[in-house]
Length: 131
Image 1 (tube, rainbow, N blue to C red):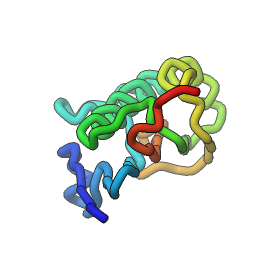
Image 2 (cartoon, one colour):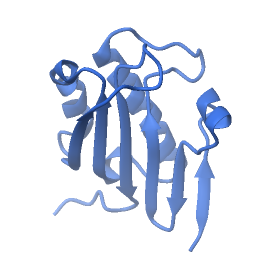
Image 3 (cartoon, one colour):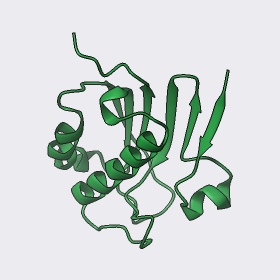
């Protein structure tokens, strides 16, 4: 079993002590990820824009791990306001509409007030092949 830790450079990773993603064999577990742009440190105020940036961040971690969004088998969405969830659906459908991973949404407070969505995924490298 080979383990590889992947960092995005997020300040939270260094402050808290975790990896953006961990790869073990063909599995990729991407930590809860929010909508910060890691190059600028900025986060959009709109929940849909945060969802888009979050999934760009997740996509980058998966690519660094040798995987891709089409390999995602499980996704968990965490939002402080459940009424915001439908606002993200067009973005989620764009990224996962063809993939259709197992999914769950949880309402919970997030670490900072400006965070409106956090997304965690699990991917299995190479499983994107369609039947």
